[in-house]
Structures are given as structure tokens and as C-alpha cells.
Image (tube, rainbow, N blue to C red; front, side):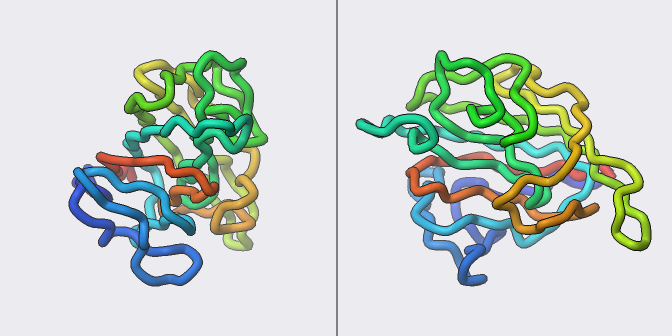
Amino acid sequence: MKEKVILFDGTNLDAFYDRETGEASNWEVKDGVCTVVDHDLVSKEEFGDQHLHVEFYIHVLEGREGQWKGNSGVYVQGCYEIQVLDSYGNEAKDNECGGIYSIQPPLVNASLPAETWQTYDIIHKSAKLNEDGTIKEHARITVIHNGQVIHNNFILPSNNAGGIYDHVVEKGPLLLQDHRCPVSFRNIWVQPLD
């Protein structure tokens, strides 16, 4: 098995670049945490089969509702968005926290209140493609949110809009979404499984 890849250990964002500029990101790094400033954050390294660990913190945003209430997203392989949102106490939906955005709601809403550190552990089996780029085998994903299984070996029928690619890939980077909300992240790593 390959060694775990530490993408963010609290010191710098050297493992990432700014999606819009291709340069170093201007997300704030302070006290072991990185916080969205603007533009998506993309890992320089790409991954296939993987166990991805991400910890996130949604700040209370007074006066904001719905999709403007602590919104971000974790895009596995730059393709598949697991929604980040202040969804504590809400119905489990595909556009709430833990949802595979616009594709599949979580089995349960495992969200904690805002201003609490939360975790995603994502086990992803990459799609397999034919030589012409068509899908031979769809990707599968298991997501554990705050210790609860919210997606169990779910077959991903397609990629999500808003990612890096408009098609499914066998390998891709981690993308953390800027949705004009100051969401924070820490302790980001990937264990390659292929």
C-alpha cells in the first residue's frame, strides 16, 4: 500500500494551487487551519482509488440562509462533490451537508451545529474507462460523516457540475470549493488505495 499523502498539516498550502490563477492560493492559513478567501483550492497531486480525510468548520453567518449558509464542497478527483453546508437539524437532501450534490442525499443527516469541527472520511473507488473515454465501470463512493455512514458503496452515475472536468476521470485532484463563505479546513490527507 502506498504511503499516506499529507495535503494540509496546518503549516502551508504548498500542496495546492488556485484554480483560477494557477498560482499559489491566497486562502488564509492561521493557527493550523486554512480558510476560504476566494477561488477554488486544487491539489497538485492527482489520485485514483483513495481514502480521503477532511476536517471542516462552518462559521455562523448571521442573516444567511439556504445555500449561502456556510457553503463549500469537497470534490473527489475534481469530479464528485460532497456538499459542505450548515445543515444541522435539516432534512437529508442532496444539496445539504453530506449530499452528493444534485445526485444523492445522504442516508442520514449527520451534521453537527456550526462552529463545531466535523469530519469526512471518503473511500472512493475510481471509475474505469475504455480507450475512447467511455465508462467501463462507474466510480463508487462510501462517505463517513462524523462517524456515521452516509453513503455506502454508492455507484456514481456521473460527475458533478462545477468541478474541474465535464467528464469522468480515472485520476484527479482534490478540489475544495469557494462558494463565497468563509469555511475552514484542517488535517487533509489521502491514503492511495491503488
